[in-house]
Image 1 (cartoon, rainbow, N blue to C red):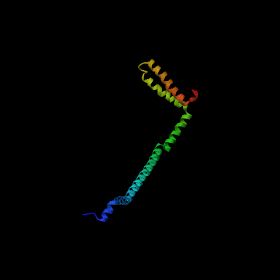
Image 2: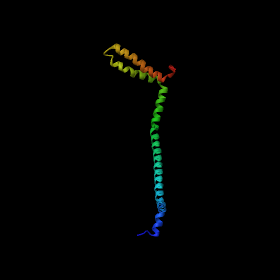
Image 3: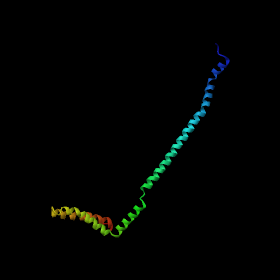
Image 4: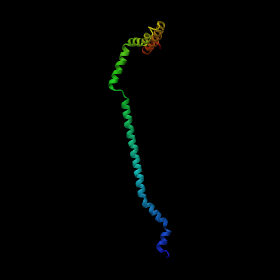
Length: 134
């Protein structure tokens, strides 16, 4: 059967039909692109909010509590008021290992007392009295 006039015209203008189909499909493409863009924007905004929340929590966690600030201030005040007591305590603690050797060898005990009192007490004195060194 020979093609009809309508079929011949449609065959010659097939590109017009393809363009029409493409234009009809455009709103679906536009909706897909818009929905993807919207979901990507929501994801990034959620990620930003989550990041800010985590940063605030980490900052709050790293801040010392009021009680620990008060204790630290009291400890620093004690250090400023009684540095000699701290040096004496450090020297006393550093001499304790020598007492364990007192029964075995008096020479070793004497050497440990001299060395540890110089290192322990001297180190504490340098830390608490920096004007001695500088």
